[in-house]
Length: 625
Image 1 (cartoon, rainbow, N blue to C red):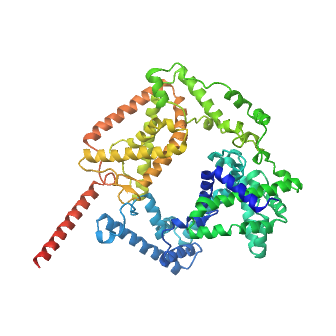
Image 2 (tube, rainbow, N blue to C red):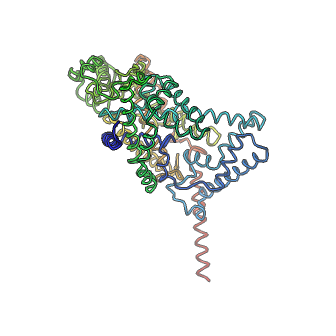
Image 3 (cartoon, rainbow, N blue to C red):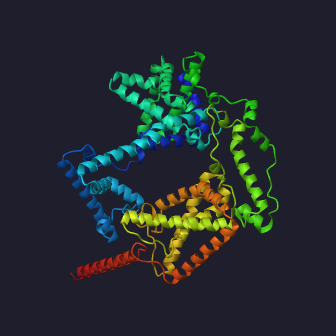
């Protein structure tokens, strides 16, 4: 068995080679509440007050079917807290400087989806709303409480079972691959899904949780069995097809004689724990968390090696050889024969497309129509993308998925053909514009329906579309085409692009319609002049990624199956209706309550003018005195 110093030296080497990825893995674990939760201490701006704690306690006890007086007290407390938030919101809307002067406008939390959720949870209003809804349907308070408790357990249990409970397996897999290979793709987060063993791995970790929970009742057994079962996540990461009891038994056998050793190894990181506390978790986030995880990955690899050498019963289940050593060139060539053949061929050139058409296809991904030459090019490009995914595996730089003991099935055909580097025809782009415009309209209408309880036809136009969404989607596909092979750059570029589009669209509409606004993010978290906000930009970034890599290719696959005899007339009809709506709305824009903030702006102007007059009157009285 290697000394702790050697294990830590290896861990530091792994961390240097995969620093960003491993830091992200540990941050995700902290975010999910799986491990390293103390690393988020630096982000804690405040702690719950006694009043908030009593609210949480009241709601929790309500889930245990308390007496009527306890339930009424909890609901009354929630209503009082909600009333305070409503007063804050009213003060901000009325421009009450006395009550809002201590709040930074850019960090406003009175409006928006994020603030709505924060306020609803912090005040307990979300529980009150759901409780009243269920009670009105069931006609009984006890039934309503029972339904809420059951629904809450089901939701929380599902998230815990499939995500939190299983994340240690995923993180263990990534750390184990990182110690052997130079490159580890972020797609390895989904390796359980590719081998179709996510549910089985979740079940194994659930059984482990049950065993550990039962041993806690014995106090002494809780400590001993913690180390007996220490290797289960790593065992499942290596062989997710293993039975739950087999994984637990194998871990117990491998840890026999090593429990005290493991305890001392953990204790050797005590200095790092103190340093984390002194830096409010910063050292943990940026170094000690991934360092510690990498070290225990090395520790597991050594125990696995000993188990194989000593032929411990069950060690044959640890059958992922190439997780710990690189495959021979001949083995890789045999497994990836088709890829090797393809890599030896020259990259196909785009033949027959020159001039303006070639320029548009290369830089913006625009095709006029799918001709024979263009279709041939698209197929060759898709094949090239598929082969590039396996290049690192063939060269021994990343884990060879085809050599995994459980065959990593290729995705279904309709998913496999989602080539993000494709070009889009003009008819397809037109349909994509209208599709995302309608989706945006449905999103806005649904959001208003949920938050305000009424249907409102959102947008400056009268038709069921919001062109800003369609325009943003098409612009992402065209202007950011060159960034598609770099997802991180694509994400931030989408944020910048969509932020500029939304900001200047807001400015243009306001300038051309007498100061009338169709959206106002004042009070949203990190907003800029009420035109854009952090919440919207984050959605744009995530939405842009979904559009480029999933939605647009999937929709384009569907549109390509439509005959041009149907596709072209359909596009023409949509454009005619859209142009007509634009012309009519330019003279008679869709405006009113829930659509624009014009009435609110008038009210704010009136209040500001009244406050100014009152201030001048007081100043004049002081001068006279």
